[in-house]
Image 1 (cartoon, rainbow, N blue to C red):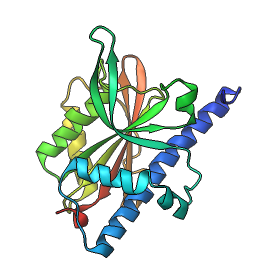
Image 2: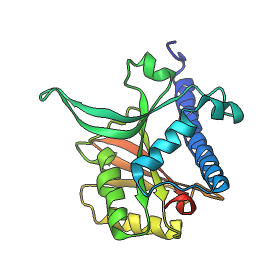
Image 3: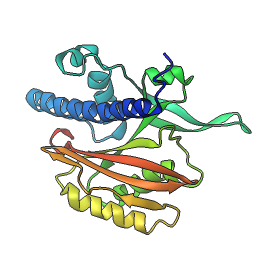
Length: 226
């Protein structure tokens, strides 16, 4: 239960866990969209409802996992979890959309986990700005609201209008460039993955002397949104 003695093996194992999370979320989104289209049903245009449906019907659904290659995935996805304990006030400073726990979370007494912060996107300036100011910034400012134990976390964009995701990513980048408190260290490949609906984009930031990597997952859901 103590992990590998070889640090490189530990790093590889953690990298695999993180990639499994990304793959499983994409597969879950694929199935959620397909199922709702077949049933001719739509979700309300509300971030919480979209996230909760995804989590309860897919991410944490045992029967769904058994139907996929992720049937042995040892991960737990929890919604609306307290984050950012403040010793002085004895309070938490925020709540994250989804916390992802693995076996490593138990080993680290609850410290080793990943965060998925969800935001709706429709191409508008308002939601793009919220993606930055109410999402990205919570991880990468000098006094981050959310922790990054493994220096990696995820921003998940629910695309609720039929927009060009690539062009919208450029708009989000422009907003970040104007945000003086955000320090971008490296813009990795503009599109690490573009397979049908899967759009994955990664950026590294400087935060309190550390390098923090955020993976941006964007997925077209406009056909199943009211």
